[in-house]
Length: 114
Image 1 (cartoon, rainbow, N blue to C red):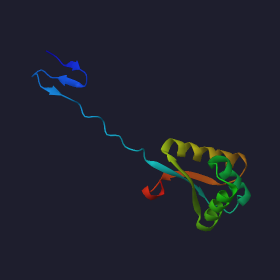
Image 2: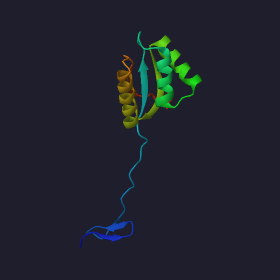
Image 3: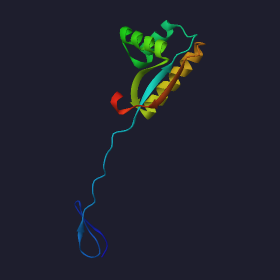
Image 4: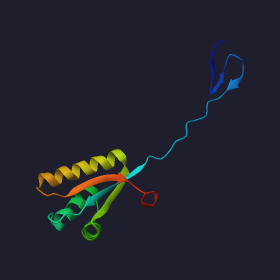
């Protein structure tokens, strides 16, 4: 006799009922989208970019831009890997299209930034 399905219970050849454990679900790893400072991209362009791509208020975008300017980089948002990579690529393309050297990258977020 082979396996028989009786709801969630299964019987193997020995007649013993077994039940598979449900899979353990884990939260996806989060990635932060980071803008890197340069000496050429205008601050106003960075603020507008943060508003447009990361949906931040003018005040919040300005704070992020000032952090990028003073510390060399700043986090614009934390997302799952695919979304973070896509946002970084879109920002890099937009910057290039507007002839600015601004760089954006996605990197694993530390657990306290999620």
